[in-house]
Image (cartoon, rainbow, N blue to C red; front, side):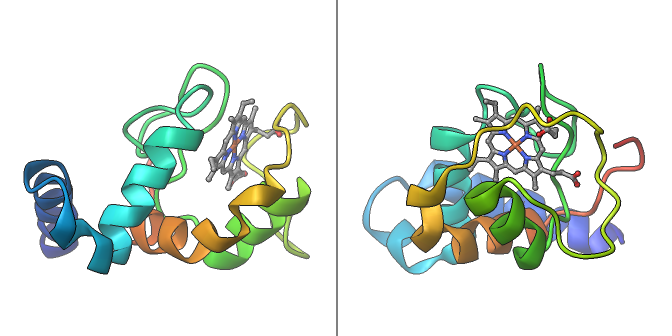
Length: 113
Ligand code: HEC
């Protein structure tokens, strides 16, 4: 657990620290950039925390991201963190999903969703 956390923190530090070239090869850094560009109007800049409207997203699977971000749906059998349906689908992010999954999946799920 501790090790995963510090790996995530390191990825964050690297992602913000070395701006430019190197990030392009790192799915976690690309995912973080895509997250900050597209999600933080509603979700927290720290995916482990609940945002102004949307819930915490740390630990989200690629399957969940595909369903929710592209189609505003949930994978079969998944219990949503919120019963609202306020998120707009963002289908233009299709190519970003694997990077978002790499970034969010690199973080431990929060204890308070
Ligand atoms: C317009 C505000 C808004 C934006 C922008 C937004 N979301 Fe959401 N998101 C929400 C809200 C509100 C919920 C709670 C469910 C609902 O009301 O749709 C949610 C729920 C989710 C969930 C389901 C969480 C769960 O486990 O139940 C995921 C995954 C998610 N958002 C991912 C993203 C990602 C990734 C982005 C950026 C690419 C994003 N969202 C952008 C508002 C937003």
